[in-house]
Length: 294
Image (cartoon, rainbow, N blue to C red; front, side, top):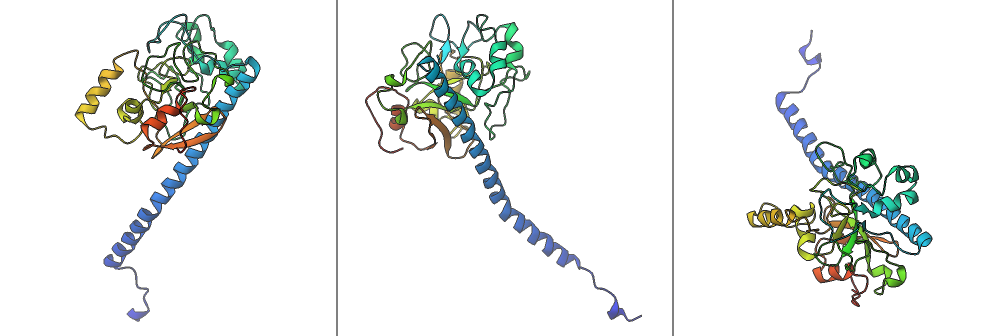
């Protein structure tokens, strides 16, 4: 038989070259695929927070004020499992097609009562698709929320004298938003719930502020671009989180910033390098300061 008639296969060198070419193509395509997936997750997140914002608009239309950020007989709020501490999310449930869940909650017993344990574990649509964490604690007994209300424009305990839109025993009307609804943050994203208190808790689990330091530190909120490896930052974060009156700022798993829903119903992505003064102005309903660009 003529050897030249035999079909010639790949040599080892040729096979390695083909594998290398395939590897290069995959390395070129993978970032694009990841970017497309993140874009899709970010779009889903925008839809989620917009729908939640609309539910609060519906609540305000029916009750002539926004719900209380946290319901408790006294304050300031301590991020601990004590007291009533019902979050604004409980009030929003009927406007998110979750009326049955809302009616199942014993509001007089409070957010941490045993009678509400089943409700606390309910999987509601308050989870950002980019966030890997669904539950607030290792026992998987409390479902967390990726979306939190804005209680204040700087770091301060959750109290009745806050100047955001959702705070302790608040009943803010749209006529109270003197800075304009398009310039006032209603909701934003947050990554962590260190105490494992969950979505029913009207604490730092569902309320945050537009403070400068807390809003930028990823150790505190899983957010923006400060370096979490710095020992000094780590120590400062642990010290702050140990204080039950500490609240902290917004953050997200989206690269470059986070989604925010404003009081006019619009949702915008705010960049991580936004001027801290501008961010603070957006957190107040009536400071008289209206940022022109953000």
